[in-house]
Image (cartoon, rainbow, N blue to C red; front, side, top):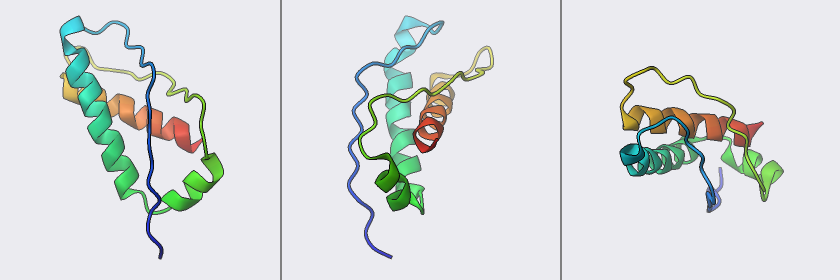
Length: 88
C-alpha cells in the first residue's frame, strides 16, 4: 500500500442559514477538523481522489439538525455531508 496523496481543500464559500451568527467560527472550525479526520481515515482515498481530481463545487445536500444542537455537532454533520458529496 502506497502513501496517501496530499490533499488540499479550499472552501471559498460555505452558506449556513438559520444558525446564530456567533456560532459561525466554531461550526467552520469543526467542519475543518472533521473533514481532516475523514480524509485521514479513508482507506480507499487514492482511488477516490484519482477519479475526482479537481472538484469545482460540491453539493452537500441538506442536513437535518436537531433543535438545540451544539456548534461542534453541527459542524460534524455538515462535514460528513460535504465528504459524502465529494465521493458521489
